[in-house]
Image 1 (cartoon, rainbow, N blue to C red):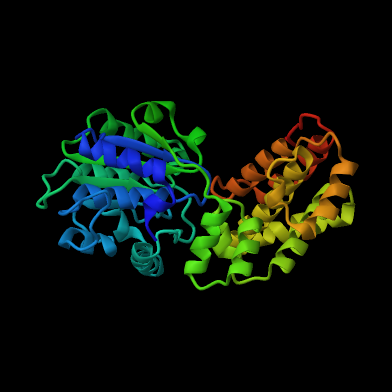
Image 2: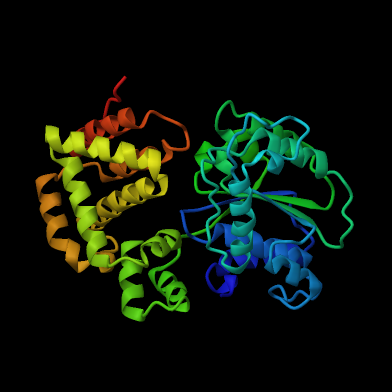
Amino acid sequence: MIFKEYQSMVWKRFIRAKANDRVGSAYLFTGPRGCGKEWGALEFAKLLNCELPGDTACDRCPSCAKFAGLQHPNLKLIVPLPGSDKANKSANPLDSLKKEDLEYLIEAIARKGSNPFYKIQVPAARRITINTIRDLRRTIYLKSQSKGKKVVLIFDAHLLSEGMGESANALLKILEEPPPNTTLILVSDKKSALLPTIISRCQPINFPALSLDQVCSILEEEGIDNLQAAQIALVAPGDIHLAKEISNQSTGEILEEAEALAKLMTRVNEKGWRDFINSNAMLAARKPAEFKFRIYLLQLWFYQAYGLRTDEATNGILPEMTESIQKFNDAFPHADLAGINIILEETAESLVRNFYIPLTLINLLISVQELLKGKTPQSVA
């Protein structure tokens, strides 16, 4: 896969910046989930260090070879990590990781090098830790022994603000006095969760969502036949991460689960709601990835409902869902579908924020009932 074929306008900005010697000291890459922001950050870093650059990195020189495994000495990759009681201010943050977490991280970085859409998610990671940023401040001002430009990539940068925001404040000091010949790239789906002072010190680059054809093409490159790839691309509009998550399941089963979850959530039924809360609270505790996947399915349902109601992206409505969604729209003509999507997004984020999940789910169900009537919901205290 060639990045410039999927995000051509973004790539042109990279090329212009390098050609004009106007590469910034800090960037903020934002855009919807699964649009290739992390891939773009890696490709930009590789381009800035390529020994034989053209309109792309050469992928042949020693520098590009090191980037293939994300082992270039000029590359610093920062991701959310679990907190640890063993951590101390002077320690390398990796030293405090459990053995299994460290092994996962090493393997995940290697996989990321060969698959740019692979998402690094260390189990129980809730934030970018303060020790990670302290370690960065200790090392970033040291002179590099390699040619090229030092590049620091911070994935899921919105998690700098979790807890008391101490990681964000520590990073701010670096952004205020950036080291020479160094570029920091913050990557995030949620720009609004970042401190305004951090946003103001970064050059913004917004990534548009991938098209259905682009998602389909990526899936086909991984060996999925054209028809199945097209169905998956419709189920996961513009989100290659979600597309990959569901690629091993039948789209029929996915749609049935989405519809069943939507009915459970929209119908006022004491037993159904109790089951919804209990089962999803347990899933969030034991299998958080599956919990978030259920939330994505609900977002899919309401996204399709919005498309059918507004006649937007009607070519993206799955035929199997049209009849059920039309009945839903007829039953709730005043529903605030955008508001429902926001409350679902907040529910997915509740895992990171360590909220009490049963209460979060009660809030979700009650809020959705108000939003279905077009009213502004009131949270449960």
